[in-house]
Image (cartoon, rainbow, N blue to C red):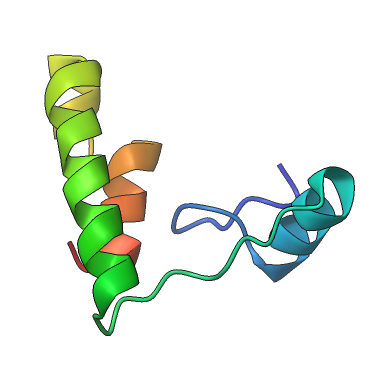
Length: 73
């Protein structure tokens, strides 16, 4: 849990650790807009609609809702 950002997603240390472990290149959320945000919001809203329970979808502290907030979706 030390790599989790309390407001959702991973903190900088968590992204660094994940990138080291997998050779990926995770970037921070881009709430100010742009093509990355458009793509992320479209994808995550679809996931929320289809894959989350009613209870999770309406919980302000669920990870999917935190991530959508972090990106200003």
